[in-house]
Image 1 (cartoon, helix red, strand yellow):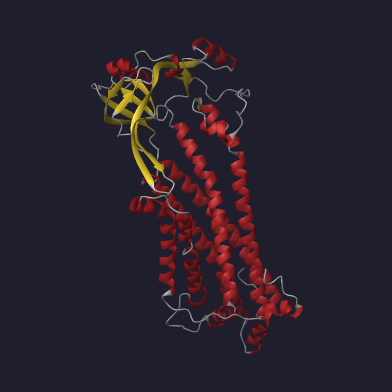
Image 2 (tube, rainbow, N blue to C red):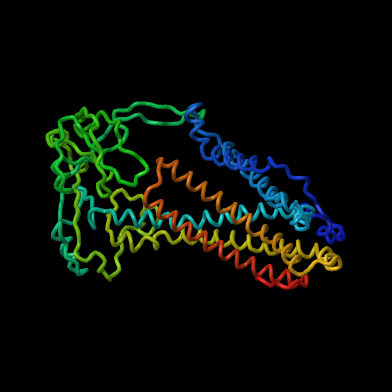
Length: 483
């Protein structure tokens, strides 16, 4: 805005002729830059936990400013590598000309490189979203124990076995391994977490804090084939192997929501299952007693089965619900039907809006970084045209001048690329590890795909750099022997 508000056209024309040299870069810039980047990432991401654990309050909005040290950290690193770089004790003057050129125009160049670093980091982060989500979905659906699973409420007109068989026949499918078991919804106790008007966390125990989906031990055996010898008063929990959350081990009371009868329970063990994730397994006698006099609104039937050709359905299928095509309905529907073929084939269609949004963001950021690098490269070369002409008069050969141009342009392209990709990779690893204290197989696979994406983006930048180098050398009258 300051630049555009100028009225003196000569000031605007002479702007490019101004040199803004950088003061001597000290050796401590490098460790200081690394410290600021790590501190900013850790403080910015971890401050909500800090405020909650130490002060017992919800993190204030200004806590996000703790990310800001990342920017001066990257700035110091770029300054160090652009101006100082890796020196040679044996040949201290080998790179004196390109280093001096970068130093006397370093402030504009470093500012541009800082923006390029952020743009490349943003492009990579946007591109990471697709493979991470896709790999998670692929591993999750492949880990399902059955091809189809349904929760059928007892108080509603739901399709029975015969109706589902008839529907499967219309899609040329043969069902097998049909299993259905009764399940009930109970209330369970726990300590609730809330925030008062002052932003302070408030904890309160409640006898009924949420619902609990319970099946009997014999029902669990029918679904999985595994026999459980559960004692009265003991409950087991089923969770997904890749779940970021562990089992609920703190439940001590289960309540019949119709009669008010309560059952004192203690956690037993955990079982890993995707299709049964979130289910609580009770001793058969406890299950019968706590479900006594429950009405149909608290009863359900859980159905699982396989199909002989789960990927053979060629016809189009759709829900009839009014909001069936919305993301909210697709992701948060409590009684969502889990069909492996639907989950895998419709995944990208259901997430198309998010994928296109992130892809658009990545393209914009990446293209902007390439444009800035190209224009900065031309500016550095053209502003030093007189220097290269003087080098010819001083006897400098083509190889010397070419190497000088290449050393300047390579830093403009390589440093933002390396720093941006490295920073966002470390930040992404920190996010994944902080979620559940580990990197799951699906997350590791997604990271592998992300690495391939970064290699492709890096290759495109390298090819763009080679093309820019040829253009700059042609403008300066330098032959490009090895480009």
